[in-house]
Length: 167
Image (cartoon, one colour):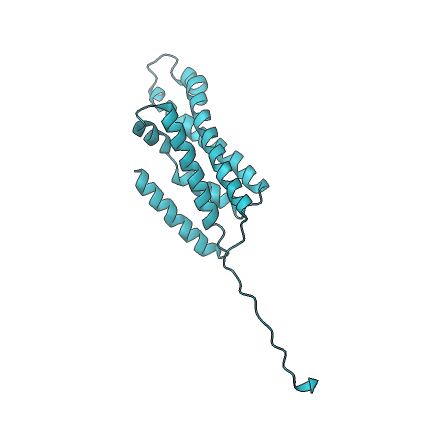
C-alpha cells in the first residue's frame, strides 16, 4: 500500500525581491539623512575655506564664479563615498547602485534648492536632507529586485523622472 502512495511536494513561492528588514530600511533612510547633511555642510566648508580663498584671491579670476560648482561636486563625491561604506556595513543589497543612482539624480540640486528657499539656510538644509533620505530609500527599495536588468531599468526610469522634475 505504501508503494502506491504519491509524494506531493509543495513548492514555496519564490519572491522576486530580496528581503529587507524594517531596521535595514530605516538605516538606509538615516544614511540618506546623514549623506544629505554631510554634503550640505561640506559644500559650505569647501566653498568658504578652500575654494574661495584659492580661486578668488585676486577677485578677477575666471574660476571664481565656479567655486560653488566645484565645492558641491567634491562634497557630493565625498558624501557618496561615506554613504557607500555605511550601506555596505548595513548589508544593503546593491549599495553601489543605490549610491550612484542617488548621486546622478541629485546632481546640481543644491543650487536649485538654495534658490527656491530664497537663500534661507535652514529651509535649504531641511529640504536637502529630506530629499537625500527619500532618494536613498527609493533606490534601496528598487535595488531589492532580484533581476538586475529589471532593477537597473526601474532605477534608470526613476533617475530620469527625478532629473526631469529638478530641471
